[in-house]
Each structure stands twice: as structure tokens, then as C-alpha cells.
Length: 352
Image (cartoon, rainbow, N blue to C red; front, side, top):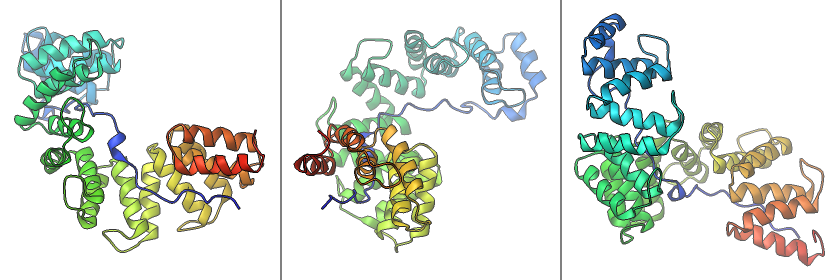
């Protein structure tokens, strides 16, 4: 008798990497109050703020056509005159290779300049570069110091990232209660990933009392902002009737949202819904499609489930070698169901 497919499970959001502060849409003012011509004329006579606004206009495609190259140029002009906001945004463009060749060293330099001139976003991103060793040697102690400063100043991304380090015990003593406290500070400011991670804390009772209703609430807040982890986990809560009455249609809707954003666990979960015909027409082909996407995304559940489909020949030609291949990928990540399925398959003298 074959081992069953994996049961549905909410994604462990704590495996996510630290999140950089996103580039601000506009930190100082609302660019829409000016015309493009006004900004251009002011910039030509040396108005640093206008140069920064022009960078925003070209970056976001406001007032003019989006053009990352011109955004970088106007940010550079303001940055060279000491504008912290533009220094940080220019660093971001070097980090991402937007309008300039990607260069972590230059990104690090501009983040340093932005941080030195008072940009909390610059300081948070500088901390991330120290933590990951991007453009500089890794320095976890310096990363923690900078995250503490940004968190203490009320920066949501700094609070989230410091909370993440406490959750992992990376550079600090592991402390789920402190992690949850910091997530809550960021979540109350609308930080979507902090909301999702706080939901996970409540779901698992890590640093806070276990509370499915609170988990459902925070996953909902994150999902409303388009956070794919929050969407997947909210789908799971609807699917399992935790913190809310069971609602399979809503479970499918949120799994689909997250799957469409490339969330590998949600893709596996959606595959299971197709396989079982729960909230969707039963379809082995669609199940395999989503298991394949999930497996390619590195999710061990998706790899295990795809291996199982090959083992029994559902939606794909039966193929023990392919089954073993995907089971071994999942087993290498510690997936216990994959390990059991391999043992079962080898015990039958198959797949060797």
C-alpha cells in the first residue's frame, strides 16, 4: 500500500529571507502637486528637492513615461549634493540593476551615504547588506546594531528585520516573545510580511499564546495587501476551519492568489485541491501542473506530491525513476513523507 500524499500544511513563513525596505514611492511630498515642467525648471537651477522628485517621477512613471535610466540620473544629481533620500534610492537602483548596471559595491556605498545623512530606509538596507555580506564583508553584529537603531526610531522594516533575527537566533539570542513584539510593532504600521509572520506566531504559539482567531486576523491583514504568504496561510485557515468556519471556496480563492504570485507551497496546496476535487473540478492534469510548479519552486511538499504522481501514474506516465528523483529532492530537505515513500518504494525493489 502506498503512503498517502502529504496533507495540507500552512507555509513556514519563517524560512523567508529578510526583506529590504522597498524604495519609497515618494518620501518627502506628493509629486502630483507639481507639473513635470515645474520640476524640470527647478532642477535646472539647482533645486535638490526637485531633482529628487524628478527621480521619483521617472521611476514610478508619474507625470512622464517611466524611465529607470533617467530616474537614476536625477537621483544621482541630488545624491551627489547630499540628499539622503536620493542616495538611498540610487543605492536601491544599483542593488536591483535598474537603469544602471547591478553593482552591490556601489549600492553599499550609497546606502552608507543615505544612512549617514539620516535615511532610515538607507540604514535598514545597509544593515541588510552587512547581514548578507553584499558589497562588503559579512558583519552580523553591525547588522543587528543598525536594525536596532532603525527599529527604535519606529521604522517598520527595521522592526520586522530585527524581529526576524530574534526568531532565528541569528546575531542575537533566540527569543520568540521579542520577535513577536517587534513583528507587532511593524504589523501595526501596515508591514504586510510582519502581519503574516505575526499570524504564524499566533498559529503556532511562538512567543504569544496560541490563538487561531488572532492568526486568522493577521493573515487576513497581510493577504489584503497582496502578501502571498499571508494569502496561502489564510487559505489554509479557511481550508481547515481554524479561526474561522471552514470555507473551501475561500480556501481555493486564496491559494490561487498566492499560487499566481509564485508561492510554491500554495501551488502544492492548490494541486491537492484539484487532485481531491475540493472546491474545484477534479483534475489529475491540473494537480500535476501545480505540483510541477511547486516542485520547481523548491517546495518539498510539491516535490513529494509530484513524486507520488509518478509513482502511481496519475496525470503522468508511471515512472519509478522520476518518482525517486522528486522524493530524493524532498528528502534532502528533511521531508518525512518523502523519506517514507522512498523507503516503501525501495522495499518493493522498485526505483533502484
